[in-house]
Amino acid sequence: MISIQNKRECCGCKACDDVCPKEAISFKIDEEGFWYPEVDMLKCINCHLCEKVCPILHHDGISKGNLERPITFILQHKNVSERFNSTSGAAYPTIARYYLENGYYVAGHIFNEDYSVRGYVTNTLEELELLRKSKYLQSDMHGVYTTVKNLLKAGEKVLFSGCPCQIAAMKTFLGKHYEGLLTIDFTCMGIDSPLAFKKYIESMERIYGSKLAYFKSKSKETGWRDLTNKMIFENGRTYFGTRAIDPNLKATFLDILMRPACFECKFKGLPRISDITIGDYWHRHSIKDIDMDDNTGTSYYMANNKKGLDFLEHIKDQFRCEEKEVEALFRGNPYMFKSLPEPSKINRKDFYKAIINKDFKEVVDEQYKKTHTVPRIKLVTISLLRALKRYHFNPFRYFRFLYYNVFCKKVNVDLATSLFLVWDSIRLDLKKGARIEVKGICTLGKSKGSKGVISLGKNASLTLDTVESEGSDLSILIGESAQLNIGYRTILGKGVDISSVKSVKIGDFSYLGRYCKVTDNNDMIVLSDEKNIIVEPVIIGVHCLIGENSIITRGTTLGDEVIVVPNSIAKGQIPPRVVVSGPTAEIIKKNILWKK
Image 1 (tube, one colour):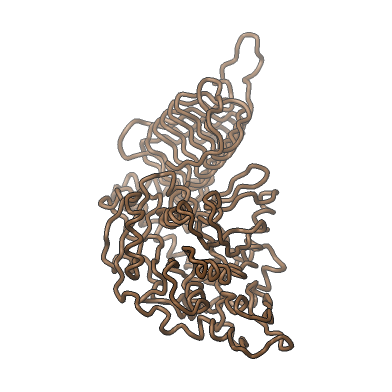
Image 2 (image 1 turned 180 degrees about the vertical axis):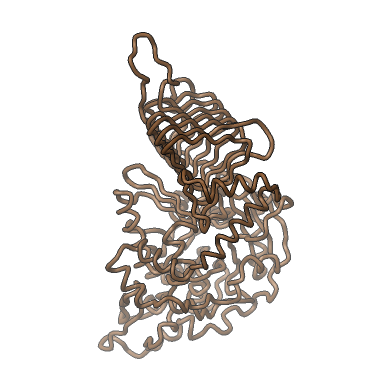
């Protein structure tokens, strides 16, 4: 019977669970959140079926008959909405939709209410949304193998997708070839701990003060290549976590979340085990690829046998499709052939013990700092050389850069992590006590073009986090003791005009279109029957798009992910994820997604 002495000898597929005729196998969850089989010897009849279906014990020969050199393509769905809602080029949902529309069955994976993952079988098209989108977690496959086998024996057609080890488990469980089965795997780096993911969610819920209502990995609003985790909380707030800042993604790239068996995966390389292998087409981006890669996702499709190649004909007309040499796929997916190395600088036992008792984000940030520490002098040198190159070795511009980044006490820049790159086409006017806080690489202005101004009154503050402007003719005016915060990776279009007399806050990943205006006051005009300038703070949420020539007036709060249509005026409380238009900011669309 199955007896796991070495955790690297169990991939957690649960095929042994389904095959046991006496239900003698249960699963114990270890301190890392992974499950392992345990046999009840009082129920066991020594039939050895659990050993016979174990994919790790029988990994040799499972791919018999598949091509040593598969036929490979890159795919991008022609419908931008279809691929925008997917995590790659929309290969999987298109394949699954074909099966469901024809009354066939699809066996995939869905999130439970607590964001754990389980296997799921359906023939209902309306449930496709549950199956699509990547889920990088250990999936509970209890009952799925039995269900699929019964369907196949009844003559039904079934699409089964999963990790390579799960495909192998399905084949060993079935014990023979079924023409009605089509299998799909992907280039798997490894499956992550459900415990760690649970602790990640708890950490983010504490930060945002609300329960999680929506999660999507590899969300594309900030760009497919960012691998962004998106969360929407019950209080309406939105979070976009790129791999540079998100604790879950940081931990993933520390190689600390994976199941131990993934460090010695038996299912890498060629020939593949499945009929079809799909995944992200990662490659060196160039202008030549723009028709097949606009940063909204591109899939690769690997036909590992005739069945996989023949199936492509059913869906090919829905894609921009290009045949590629197999080596082009390998360059961007090296873990198709090799397992990730186990991290040597992190004590795995200590890590999982720590996330039980401490905040997940704090633990990950601490470990990340330990393993990614680069000597400060090297980082500063790189920053100085980068700036020198940026200013084309122009001594006047470089000395100006040095003044504002090194010597000016009114500008706070840590050259090990940040750069304040402002062209001389923008005039800086900083009054006594004014302060500019710079995070990341902030790039304002252009080498040529109209003149702009950034003016801070007495004791005013400006906070910038990886902000970029598309032109030099921007105007940023901050009054005495006022503040302006511009969030992470926000872009300011040409001619943007921002005025803050008290407080203006612009959220992360936002885009301010050309010649739009944001102001928390009445343009500093005092009428004859008024005593003071009227001021009401402005808050622009995360990932908002302000169309060109639009105005965000005083007292406005834009919820997260709002689009303000060009030439509109926004005022008041505007809820998240809507499109507003016109002089009264009328809501014309709800529940939107957008990417520039």
